[in-house]
Length: 109
Image (cartoon, rainbow, N blue to C red; front, side):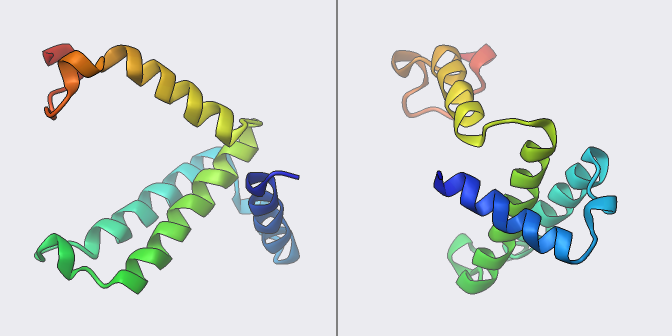
């Protein structure tokens, strides 16, 4: 069993033990993901980047991952596959010779 599958299974077990599946529709999972990402951002608000509390970043990042994994599971997506596919697509949009050292969007390269 892959590590990703172990994580998803643990999340599903946690969810099911609490009868929360009823709340985990794609819309609400996407909203929860956004809320948790906002909480992660809040840790950096009005601070220098190295002033965010490391433990809190870790906790909020785990929440972001958890809802992202649950949303992927809801759609039957293989997390490894979709991330590697997106990386492949991005490598075409951002060829090294054009994108190296710049933060420009692909249509501005």
